[in-house]
Image (cartoon, rainbow, N blue to C red; front, side):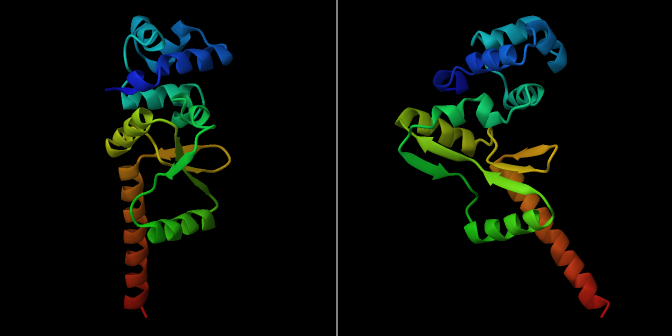
Length: 171
């Protein structure tokens, strides 16, 4: 089961492209793919890879969850699932460090309305195909999947430990 089985992502892509007044041919050129491939994406005949979905989202200047229709699809739902890595205390501390550096950090929230969509989102999260964390300044946004965020936090912790050890050694 793919994204198109739950969310007709091509419909969302087409709507956003038209809203931005970009032709299909121009989108194909921006994405550096054949026009026929892009057309198949919009017509839900072909499913874009996770990498291509990220490229399309970037070209349309939207985040991936908006492109997939997750934000609008979930507005009237009853259950909220915040998708975070396992250790909430560490995440809170890392988020504080990120904020201290002048960045904003947001975590995706998925609101479940039906079991099939919820299961599809769970699979997408487990397979690291959708971002869960958004870190941004005033100009740019960094979209991170669960594993990318874990790798990022590991780098931050490694750097802090290294710097602390250096300070202690030099005292």
